[in-house]
Amino acid sequence: MTAHNNDQWRVAMREWREHWRLGLAALIGTGMCLSVWPSVSSLFVAPLQEAFGWSRGDISLAQNASLAAALIAPVLGRLVDRVGVRPVLIGGLLLTACAYFSLALMHGPLPLYYLLYGLLSVVGAATTGLTFTRVVTGAFVGSRGLALAITRSGLALSGALLPPAVFAIIATYGWRMGFVALGTLILLIALPTAWLWIRGASVAPTSAPAGAKAQISLWGLLKNHKVVLVCVASALNYAPIVALLSQFQPLLVGKGLEAASAAALIGVVGVSALIGAFVTGMLVDRIWAPLVACIFTLGPAAGCLLLLPESLEPWVAIVALILLGLGQGAEIDVVAFMIARYFGMRSYASIYGISVFCIAVMIAIQGSLIGLSYDYFGNYNVALMVAAGCFVLAALSYLGMGRYPTGDQVSAAAIDTQVSSSASAAPSK
Image (cartoon, rainbow, N blue to C red; front, side):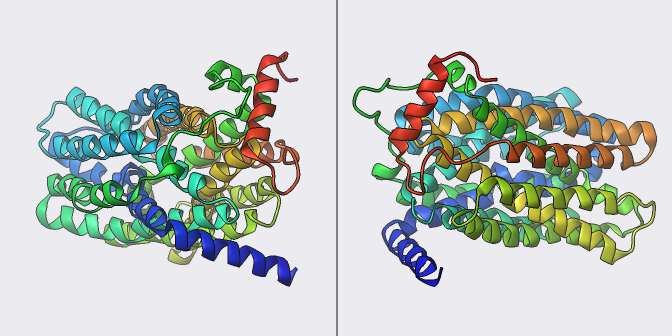
């Protein structure tokens, strides 16, 4: 076991010496682009409510913009598989910054907010795991799980540091400057690092093996039941966390915490997500990934139940947020790892795009209903119980993935051939 671990660390060191620029650019970009928005979005709820008189239900309906992102994600995935990561990512970074600046200039009415939120969701889809995990999985093979964890730490760190920073900016300068700050981070840091360092063969389109079809159709991929299973499981896992994050500050305030303390506690999610990312990243290189995913998905279910009492002790809130953060940190790493491990790289972005589609649809549903649930029931308890149920279903779904397609070192071409064969056969049971 020791020799095996030493070999893995040697592989990791060699791959990071060769591709550290790619990994660092992905780490920075992941922590500063659209993926961090769920961690800070709840900080804008009360200011927008005060500025325009909108209800929390009105504001949460903007989550329906995820449906537009859902429709575009599989198309973006196909585009990444065809032309490579770089052009899609660079364009997405520029447009996402512009979308944040547009929100800062907004003066109402409510439909305009929905329109701009939709624009942010659509163009921002090109700056999420759809592109950044493709960068990492293409460059790192022997230490893929660890590399994904290190990259994911960028989002975990920003999830810990940005909420209190953005809260301070909003409190001092107003909500408009909060949006300006988010756009400026992209233009001054994420875009330059991506432009300079995300390049080379590992982020180019993956060529088809001799004798194979150039690219499997989306419908062909969907005929593989494991593709559907991993995508649905990722949606049931990730969407409830995003929905809860969108209302976390008012949720915690309603449970008896002060507004500033609630904003600071959101950072606990980011810290625990960082831990979850590293732990799961190291585990999936050694242990069956669906089992790791199952364990780390049951934790958030318990966290939701801890948040049910009408009055929370601070330590209970902290434990609940830690469990939710561990699950959030694990989800992106494990799903990205499983897509590459079960299906290879040739259709990686296409399958990841399908998972984003499923996640976005679920976010639109749950993100809208959580605010409406508060408006109807006067609290978030029903939403918390529904979220707990989704986490349990996701945990069970991961276990349905079964064994890896071949041995420990399966080639991408062999996995892609399996998917192609499955797609041309009758639908799976």
